[in-house]
Length: 121
Image (cartoon, rainbow, N blue to C red; front, side, top):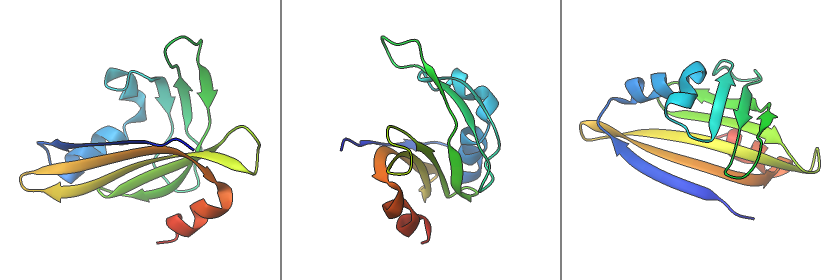
């Protein structure tokens, strides 16, 4: 399975970075793949993301928020391919770094059973 893993240090506090990553209505301003988004960063809620990758028409993805620890960790999980067996997990992990914030992002397919173990920490 392939994973997209990226990190960046942002010259802003974790609280300021958190405010941006949970402002789903403004994702299209900074995320070239999510053209429209809606929802709230509350565990158990469903987000609505219209995603388009180069060369396709896009699709609407409805993941569920699994972790929402303000200024620390946002994770959502969406079922794909074979419902109940595979999922796509997206994480934003924030850590203070000097005067700024280290933001690490992951997008990866995961078996549903393995996601619960990580989410329980």
